[in-house]
Image (cartoon, rainbow, N blue to C red):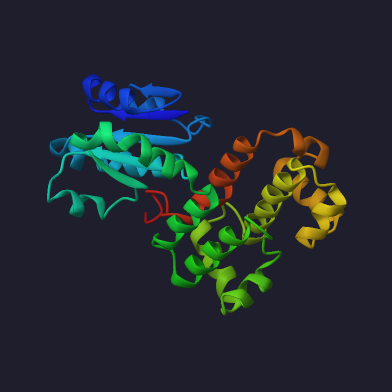
Length: 258
């Protein structure tokens, strides 16, 4: 499902006509919430004269739906580059090129791995450099064989595990822990492998984690056993990871400095 949010109904209709597949037009920003688990990509249309006022909304979307790529559609203006330095978008399309380019840009954004998109977001965030490097590495590796613990991750990025623990703790502010972050990535990959038909014995062997360890990680994070884990829709599991364990590593909440 592609979400469309625009300043005017006319712009929303312009973008809707250019999209191939299911579309949901979001009429009010307040209608966009963390429960929107079916949105694979958000097309955000704003004319240049209003864009400065909409930057805060873009940042709010990034905070609420960190796994969803955002494509900004706006006017071709020199000042746009300065405004976009304050937010992260997956792509940029000019209104005059919507009919020719938007569909292809959406497919490109959707085609990128969600974990790779998260890795890119954390790499460009304001987190400390060591934590940025470590978290991005963990997210990339989770597409194949997830990093099993902080010590293994620290060795991979040539950093002290104590430093990574401290930076993660300071950044997450109690909303998650490094072990839970890595454990959730392992569960994500375990579910993916199981969905391909691999037996749990094979999953354990590929991840280098005993089945009992995977069971404990699933129980600690989701409160379920491995059979119940298989029944959770993958997009819901990814959304839960993004909200609970990834979002805390992005820019701190607005009141963090108070």
